[in-house]
Structures are given as C-alpha cells and as structure tokens.
Length: 122
Picture (tube, rainbow, N blue to C red):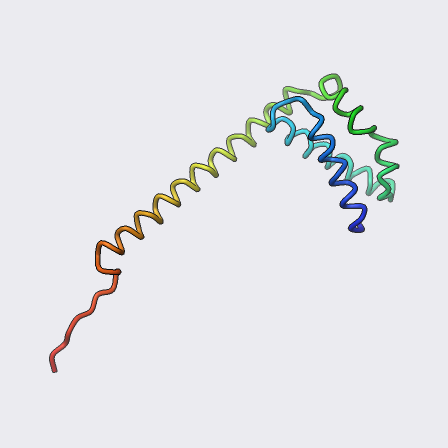
C-alpha cells in the first residue's frame, strides 16, 4: 500500500475514532475490528482509493451515527475489557520497574557506588 493511501486510511480511522461517543477502550476495540474489515475489503477488491472505502463503508459521520445500531456491543465490550486489563497490567509492571530501578540506584549509592576494592599485599 502506498504511503498516501496509508495516510488517508489512518486519517479516516482517526476521524471515526473522534466522532464515536463511547468509552476509549470501546472505541479502540471497534477501530481494530473495523480496520481489519477494511483491510480485507482492500485486498479483495484490489483498491487503495479512500473514495472506494467511503462508498462501501460510509463516511466517518455515518459510521459514528450508526455505531450502536450496527455493532454487537457486548462483543466489543469484552474486547474493550481485555484491552483495559492489558493496559492496566502494563502500567502496574511499569510502576514496579521504576520502583525496582529507584531501589537499585539507592542501594548502589548507599554501598559506596557498588564497587568493592580490596587491597592485596604482596
């Protein structure tokens, strides 16, 4: 796919994401599903034109307006919950990593820089 087509598609998805009025995790779950559907359409129809995509799927406004009537919200909520759990786990791991690094730095400084020098007599 050409860069121009990729950028247009990215702008299309971002525009849809901005117009959705649901929670952030639900938006992300929808955009992931929708982008895979669009990518399948692109491959099957051998097209990269954003006009073809808009003609087939609709404008970002239409997609956002029809979001609740067209989608299986319960499936999207499950995916959104998984996404939220993964993000939460990554945040917890990041905090633990920072705590460990701070503890290691403090330990090194309290023990004279962490270098042990022994004098040997000959």
